Image (cartoon, rainbow, N blue to C red; front, side, top):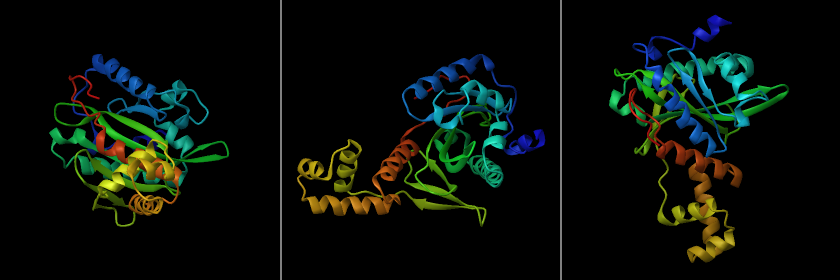
Length: 265
């Protein structure tokens, strides 16, 4: 089983030199502050010690355990609570993600976030989660010391949906598990009406209230919302809200910091 865990670590995610663990508490406190402000589960991966440095108490990711129990398990958590075929997928994503990021100039790496979906198992229950991972602390040569993972409910129905986003860029990359290649795509472009309807929808307004606030006919709001569903690849309001949260996170949040620096939120 230990050999299986070692498969998550290879030359592409090796850490150059021993990090300054005197800084570890700063990173943990930063992650705690973020975890307290979100419904999502948050944890920190330590690529030098090959374990978890921190796991938030948010229950979504814990599979009925305490955060300390999951932290103690570390990578064993994946082997115990992810279907075997999806563990293989995670290993491929791990390799593909680091191979991608290692081609990015070190100064730009903190802008990138990888996102993918997989199931976690708690007894007889299977839950499809979305897992976003970004560099949190780096060594001077650009190798990743700590990774920050954020877990939420998936907006999809199957595992996969592997994408790489760069903060401030419209394009994103999608990884194809069949061809084992990254393909580039454009982020959906919204017109002003769609942006306004998106904002008002997030605020929880009904179609009639949106129409009144935006000075539009109800049918126009319905039509614009259908276009939004198509652009975001969803078919109901629940998935719509989750997709919006995912897009906002991927395009605007930057947790990357250099070893020796101060956290930036």
